[in-house]
Length: 168
Image (cartoon, rainbow, N blue to C red; front, side, top):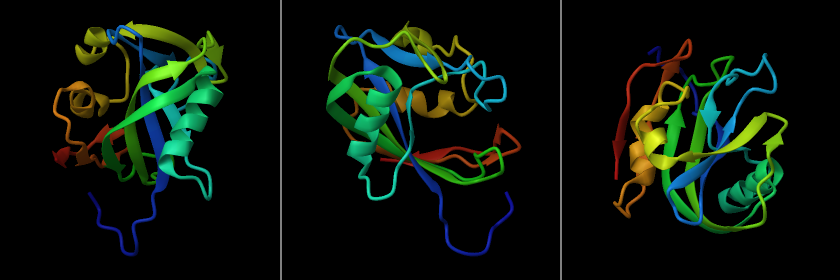
């Protein structure tokens, strides 16, 4: 990976995985609404960019409300992830990864990005769905029993993961 000069100024974002009441399924968006979407045809958790002046918990709650119509009642920070070069123009991203075990409301069937679907967590962890290439590395840490959050780095180049490392 080419070393850049200057400060690391990533786009800050949240990524949340809403659990079903029995905790056996997770609510994902199947990104099938816009063919020009870099994530078109992929499954993903809910989330997005933080707004100016917004803390990460408020940003995660807002995204869950906007994308699924759910009020997040509990957020569990599972980790942070630095994605240098992840953006479609090579932008750097930094994400705060959450589990959402308690929520109120009825999830929408779709949003502007695609259909919302409940997927058995074991299917997600077995990587049976089209997802971002790097998801397979960090998703097991999101759903494991270790209470400590992970902190990872996953540089991308031309849509491909260069390497993955993390600590707890």
